[in-house]
Length: 246
Image 1 (cartoon, rainbow, N blue to C red):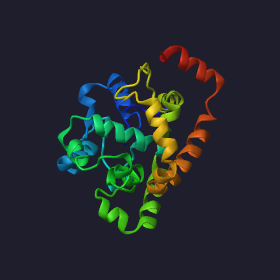
Image 2: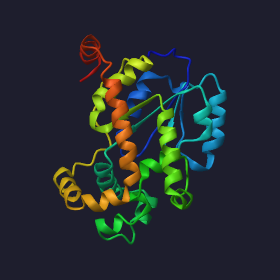
Image 3: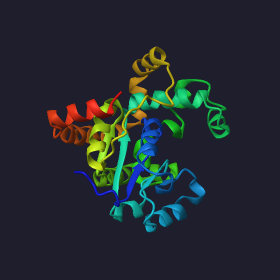
Image 4: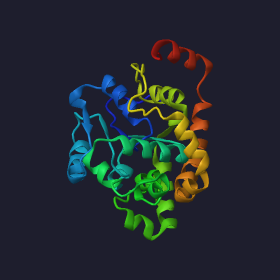
């Protein structure tokens, strides 16, 4: 499904799902005046509304929750999801090493990983983004309803990629959107592989308990991705890999 270039594209950038790498690819495939980056919560709604109404703007992306205006738009909307266990551990290391004052504040009184698991930053983050709730309180007030909303929004996505299958996900997006500059290397990666694997194994049950909604959504996303990937022909794969991949 290759789209005409005039159709708007919205990338819902869920943190720690390889989105930083993807945004570098986005910036190579669109002119600067065609891109709108939506990373400021205070001005998000006004900027989103303006961008949706501006024919010059082609690509919108940022760390924003799924918004009703996105659901009802004619835009091609996509996101990446990541295995919730791995994403939670990755987020922990990211926040620990971050120099962002807000991140430091979040972990100020969080001495251990088990303490981190009790924080909102470790609680169904992907489901919260997809549900559209900005705050943790309304999201947690009715988890069944939040999961239902997140599932509905997930099914609205035109495509959902998987961080664990980034290259094939990128190939699918390249086909859909006509992107040709797909060469990449992973950005914003914290190389704590052995330590991360150890935490994931040791505290798997505890992480899963805090991410039941994420696990349910990831299962749906994985099934959708596998169905989409199965449509890639050997010719398409060879063409894109030869022309675009490192």
